[in-house]
Amino acid sequence: MLSLFLVLKSADAEDVKAKFTFSVLDENGEPVPSYSRTNWGYNEFIKKADLEASAHIRDDCLTIRCDVTVIHSEETRVPPSDLHQHLGDLLMNKDAADLTFQVGGETFSAHRFVLATRSSIFKAEFLGAMKESSAASPIEICDMEADVFKSLLHFIYTDSVPTVLDVVTAGHLLLAADRYNIVRLKLICEEKLCNQIDSSMVATTLVLAEQHGFHRLKEVCLQFLASPSNLEAMVASGGYEHLKSSCPSVLKEVISRILPAELKVANDIIMEMWK
Image (tube, rainbow, N blue to C red; front, top):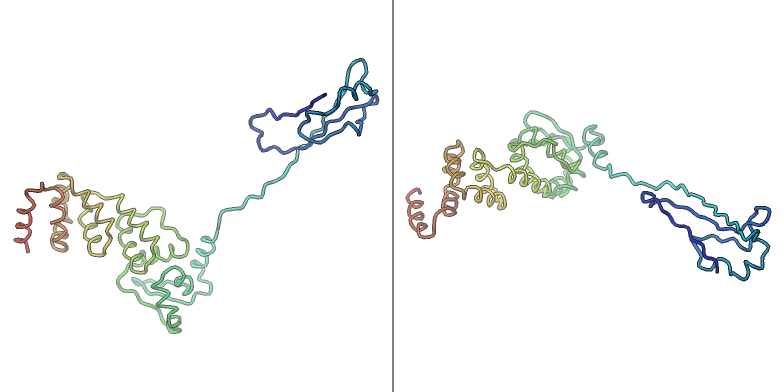
């Protein structure tokens, strides 16, 4: 029995697609239909008895042709989502905007349904009663800086924060995200602050975390201050007095992290004297 196989040897041609045909050629060099097969290989291509009885062996030689056809097929590549770009353009171009905000002396246009989709607070405010007056008169936000509100809107429409997000802006944006219940932005800003803790800003960050209930951020600050050298540097910083006056109870937690157990009673007495 005559067996035939075709093997792909090139290591970097794994994605090549092809079809091929094995054909026994007659005395005129033409394929013999009864001895033509299309497949990757055959264990039983031609029986030995049939081959010997045929007229296709000449001078003890047999000619077999293999026709290979490479199939060039372009893969359909799905591009990444560009929804954020379209929504970003919508915000920038103000097309069909139906809300106006006054923040820090600047005016911002927005779309109530976009804001309501991204924030449960905005949803309750703009869709709860469908107040038409909000479209006619500007909505004034007094306790937020204009650049922070701009970054907030940018995230709402594009799901992205500025490429360079400094610690101060991250703190303000964290409060804005918490205020409007934009969970993903809140987590991004909190993560940024957790990764940038140092002696110069840990006191103000700890006040922020304590007053607004950012438990993970507070824990990271406390772990940082559990080091006596870090605590000493924090006390020497300008933020210490702010921490002492704003959140004196947090200082008790800080001291408890570094005092041995037998001194915690004395610490409680000292903290009582501070009140």
